[in-house]
Image 1: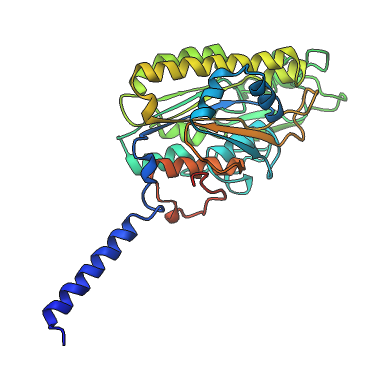
Image 2: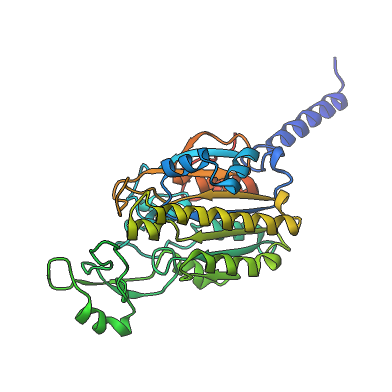
Length: 358
């Protein structure tokens, strides 16, 4: 018969082993194979059609993206919920939720993402001041943080001609400029202009909190985005960081000239060159091996057209090896949480996607 002391010691040992196993659960700590990764850089190539990306890779025209794939993974992503538009899809990517939760339904029907739902806020909750953030966007409207404003919901915002260029006033006006827009912006069939109020762009609430140190939008062409990124990358990488770097190409060229045109292809090739410059800088700063890079897009493009009404074929490339081969935009946020070791089980609203890390 065992003594009470021996029984007590045996039970204590069993309890300690079980407790250690629970604490090492993948739900509460990141995978051992990611122990060296401290930061994430999420790079967006807006409107990149997956078949075009795959063709350019086969033609060896995207050497920097190909190098990431060789070191990591290529994932075929597919938009399955919400419009294949910029606002709702980047909102999916940066929250892990669809429009029924984040409230961004289309490029015209939207509001600020509710407080606490973005990757930035979740990571800020976990790390506090022990992490830096960057939000760098080329888009003036669809990936931005403007506050309350009014829009003309039926005005033309692109010329309906061969080049389909943006009209000089765009389609969104500040309240102080409403009369100008209402009096001058044309509608497709000459209808009376319909003006609607919006509480803010998707990232307005995030911007108001003030903890994202490097937060800028409306940079337009990608070289401006690259220039700003290169100017902040050294101070940004002194600490653990999460950065979202958004390039408007090749979406803008797709709208102007059409998917698959030389201009559209050139937008992608330029993005690859910019990717190479960012990688080189991270290596120079000895941060590349400690940073998970993810390159992805919000939607594809209608083949041969200047629209993306039905363009669900997207992609994701990462330096992380052996990611799942297929995914949706909602899977990006859970993957990033997995990299940072964020316990998502306690989230009040369950994430709609799942981590790609196997």
